[in-house]
Amino acid sequence: MCTGRPITIRQMTTVESVTHTFEQSALLDDAYANDRARVFHSWSAQGALNPTVIAGALGSKFWDDKGTTWIDFTSMLVNMNLGHQHPKMIQAIKDQLDTLCMVAPPFANDQRSEAARLIVEKANLGRDGEARADGHFEKVFFTNAGAEGVENAVRMAKGYTGRMKVLSAYRSYHGGTALTVGLTGEPRRLENEPSVPGLVKFWGPYPYRSAFHSDSPEQETERALQHLRDTILMEGADKVAAIVLESVIGTNGILVPPPGYLEGLRAICDEFGIVWIADEVMAGFGRTGQWFAWQNWDAQPDLIVFAKGVNSGYIPLGGVVISGPIAHHFDTKMFPGGLTYSGHPLACSSAVASIGIFEEEGVLAHARHLGSDIIGPALRDIAERHPSVGEVRGLGVFWAVELVADPVTRGPAPVSTVAAVVAECKAHGMWPLSAANRVHVVPPCTTPDDVVRDGLEILDAALAVADAAM
Image (cartoon, rainbow, N blue to C red; front, side, top):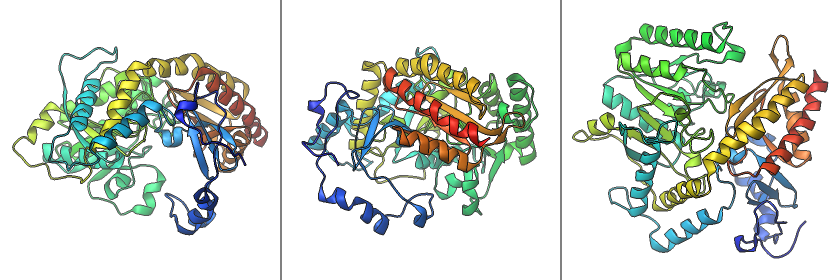
């Protein structure tokens, strides 16, 4: 156990070079026992849990109550884009605490107003980072998290179109509320069925495991768009209010849309008067090297759902960025929704600080650099040398390593193999994120080059376990 003076931001030179020390508190001593006795965890069989007690974190690393330190290749839940304990974030929250802790949604507040202004400004940028001439997005509705954002975006689309059906992809995750878990396509939805009426699933593009037996990314785009069009027509195009789609699929594989897919989606939505809701909860705010992931392509949604990276989860915050036509639809018609903590001043102050940090510290450029110069090349080299790696894919600091049992048949590696790789990584100082047969590489967007390289070297060595399992 480490003992000594508690670490503070003022003691730091650089967040990656400081050796952490901490004092063991009585509460920390009891944290594990109290957790197992009293805490009910998400998406888990409670009796099988053995949670690690996290005592502290800094930058791109965190440590437990025994003093063991890991490189954070998870960004916790792909939300700490600015890393742990950023001093400017902490100071902004402290300053707001001294000014105004809470104000109800009907009032105006400087932090809420400024956060909305900044978010709309970033949403109205093109892929080149320059402001688009159309000023497409106008307003923000604030929520407490991503699921609430998706929920309210769907409510807006239904109110705007007067239609009831909503389409979403099978390989997707949109949240854990009644509506959003119904929109979710992955198997976690099954135990929550039956769901909300009017939800329809379709297959999105996935060239490595094509549902359309495509031979190229271009063919995958063509066939996936035809399938989407056919689904809409069979469901009744005049009945479909919205298509909800993660701009880059997150939990279900870091699936980057092939060329032309989002542009084709936009054309289909325009043809049938359907609202495109871009779920940017995980992919937004720097994760792909842009403010929003869809800005990597030449297509523009009608509604954008954000959360996670908007303020790196320092305080719960989410929301919906609303295009002009939809926003003005509710100028004279009541919007049938609301939240007690919509636009909470503490949360909004952290979003304002976050966007300032992104700009001042060149975070978007650094995320692009990490993806193109370090993570991408390293993972492609890893894929060449490890037969257990079927494919690597991603952009920015948003990557997946897909493990297979057989590189010819592409049969997914069993969960036990992935668990063994994860355990090997943890044993050597890197905490990875895994889902199904994949290991995701998603460190904070601010992670220094050398720390990313260290984490990738640990992953490289750990994959020998998967090779041996084949």
